Length: 390
Image 1: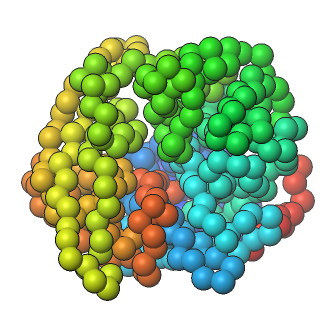
Image 2 (image 1 turned 30 degrees about the vertical axis):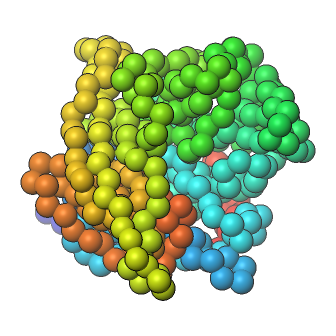
Image 3 (image 1 turned 180 degrees about the horizontal axis):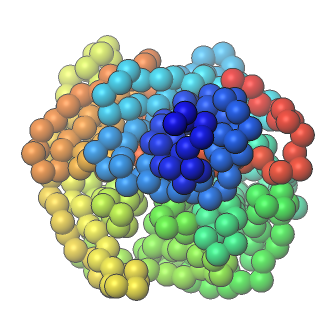
């Protein structure tokens, strides 16, 4: 029996095992294959099964800003074993003279923007080289924005939430209670009537949101000088607060970052301070750091129950920042000069991963990533209608 005569369910079982690049090429084999690979059910199944299979072999999506005249933003796929694949991006509308921030991923889709003041927002699936420039929100002038990117599984919608401060001058913070949401299915922004995070005493977030199970999380420093984790639930579009352990609140000298570890929310604490890279002229000191990793325990209904300190690591030589976790148990760290260190949580082995160029340490961002076929174009978009070029 020729492969073209295989039953569709058996053909799907074969095709979903292929990498995304080969699936994109396979769409041109025949109309049957094209329809199958474009089917939303196949796309969802392919991503879910790839996510499960990627436990030992997931890649990383690395965001670097290398500076230069007009800026030089590089996204790179870092697979488990094969060589790094750089994707240099040039597109209109997004200011690449300053570093960009990645939000997500959600089912292989990310958002690119500048954290903080008003900036163009781009939704992107880098694995299929597809981009979409979002329309401007209603409120833009003199606005310091916090952005979150997530996925609503009940409506199958990718959403961006925007909230923040009007006319910020760093001495008079006026919180804007208007909360806007962009919905990819309608390609538009709308204001939502929900409790503003100002009701929680929300002050500001220094880090991009962490996306987990479709929702958005921020570690925030509040107006009352307290600290908390805020979540925006994409399904019912409301904010709520997750308490932070008292022992963490008492530690005022550590950096705090939220990541995902073993499909759980993780909070990493480590000393503040910079490490001068070895190649820097006049380098005459280094700094060792210890890292405490707290993980949120969940009940059977996936409701947060309590925090547990799972790991205490170090001292490690010369890391600046925690960058996140790989699904194979590796802890990712910036090791000076925009380079990456991989520390295995179980074996305690350390590997250095040399990235292209010397990105400023604070401009390096790494996300665990699983490729997908999810499109960021709407069905009524004209083919090729995109202001972005690779």
